[in-house]
Amino acid sequence: MSMDISPEQKKIQWSLFLLRLGVFIVMFAWTLDKFHNPGHGARVFEHFFYIKGLGNSVIMGIGAIELVIIFAFMAGLWKRYTYGFVMILHGVSTLSSWKQYSVDINLLFFAAWPMLAACIALYMLRDLDVKFTFQRKKSLEAQA
View 1: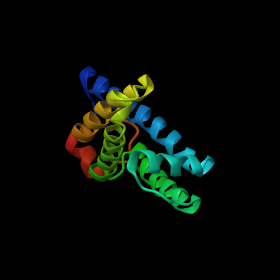
View 2: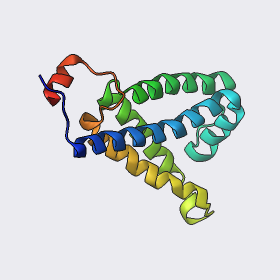
View 3: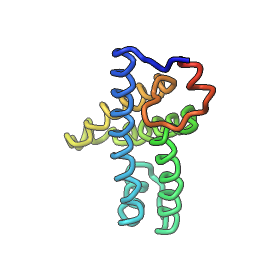
View 4: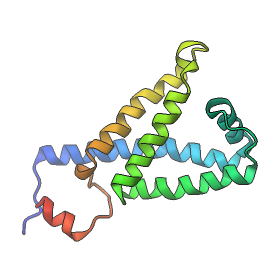
């Protein structure tokens, strides 16, 4: 069985990997912030999600769950769920910041939109995102 792929397939694989890596880097930084500065995480939940009173242990617990999921996302595991989780989490975060786009305009928040587009593209093309992922042998054989 030949595992040769076309130059176009190689470009797609590298492009999707780079999108996944870029999204992972941002999500990883956000997650580390929950451990490094849980008070900041609590303020984010209060200001953007209207969830008050989250203690440090709760924020760190959320961070631990996120950490497991984003490492699975980076590894390409359980793509329907991990890519979907990252897309939904970032989508909710992007939409909950609506004041930053209209009332209290903060240009840095606009970077969330291309990242959301990357998350959506990764979810839609998750079966083509195979570069540096852990895959079952069956899915590798299906690509040949």
